[in-house]
Image 1: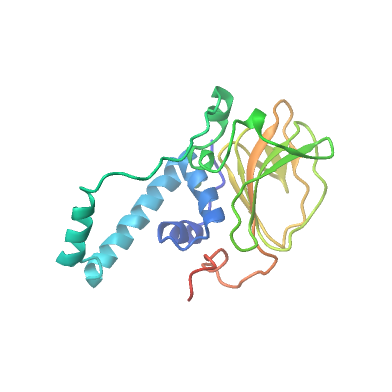
Image 2: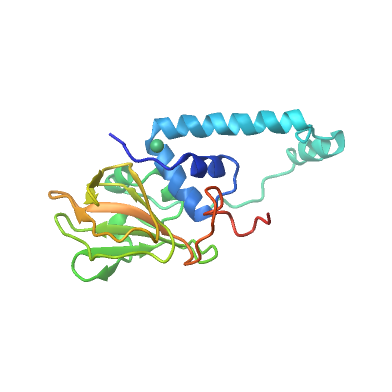
Length: 218
Ligand SMILES: [Zn+2]
């Protein structure tokens, strides 16, 4: 059962499209596993849509509508991207939004080994100073005690871990920042795969401005 969710500010930023892509990916993966958050995002998106309509900004003028409609008759020239074939284990473990960012099944990724306890695969997703990694933590191992220069969002995909007296299992969303000095201990019995997103060392102030897309000017 999922007990740790993105906070309401993150869900709102996601629903309004304000989140930078790495954090949006993490929230989307959580929402694909968590019906509660998926429904809350739908509610926020509907709310945003009705606000837009009320302000009149959603009206499409006839000229641009005709331009779009005429393009529907044009022949399709776009070559579809090559979709990697994922094996059954990967399909079971990887949320659908994450698969779009991976070139191969879990067993075929070029993992970087950090000691004997941790393996890391960095996603080809370079936005600002975000770093997005798929991590594999060995079962039953404690990780080095550490803190962060910025934020760290961890989404558990298999197994689980205990950190600062709280347990995080499959689907749980764990957000840590510079206030947290911690040492996760991975559950026995199963390796823990997790999607980990870290942002820049710069910590912005304000509950709704922590992960703003760097291309959005306020
Ligand atoms: Zn949730």
